[in-house]
Length: 362
Ligand code: F0G
Image (cartoon, rainbow, N blue to C red; front, side, top):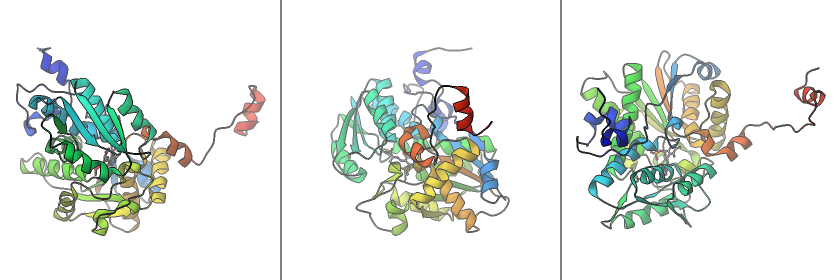
């Protein structure tokens, strides 16, 4: 029997409803959801063949979340808890996806949303999302790390809640990504690859895998393999990067908030946090689109580039089950996709012979 009560209508069938026994909510909690999560885990034979075979690869396609990135998993809980607390506004610093998600969930909840983004350094699609959802959008003359510093100051006020991943509810919500992977595969994978920026997601997945293992739903833990862009690799270099640079603007971060937790995930899992170059990211971006029909944004391709690199170095044992989280949809950044496609559209006269000539058939 269905109960179409207000909570279900607001809560929908998102990650809080599905995994509520693992999350800090009660029956009274009014859930703010856009039906996030439940994204496909897609087995990708073609890509594995293209890089030498020997293992099974599953792509967790997070671009199919409501605002087209994995951030929605944590944002549903952060905004739900902000409403429960009674604040009237939320704030975040962002390279574009957190702000897109915060703006959408704030709209849903009727909260004011303030987003601080690095001037000129977020992709077109993400800017569109902040603006269309009505977020007060502030471009800071500085990078993400500068913006996050300002947000930490704003968060000292009682009436405004920070929804960056320094808010623990973000990490709690995002751990549902690991739950879904285990639920789909029937157990934890052997290895889990993902991009690392502010380092919240690797922290979340590690938490999720551990909780499932501890309560017996899965039998083991994956080796965690995190990937930073070469020009923005503070964790790999062991020092704050003052001027991070990469084509993958989503992970253009020099001083990640969850730095220590990311190192912990890597060490406890006998994993690795490494770097990939912008060229390797772009190759992976195109390769995934060409071999599997999966369109992601450049930062998301960092995990794919990490797989290519690890395979070439013999770090993926034959017979392994490998999962990679591709974090955001390709349409977030169409300008890069057009540039990186290495092909052009052809303009022809509107007659059949011109079209045949252009295709190159008689
Ligand atoms: N991939 C995408 C598409 C991202 O937007 C981010 C982070 C990451 C990977 C890295 O995840 O920070 O948890 O290590 N984007 C944040 C933002 C910083 O503001 O949207 P992380």
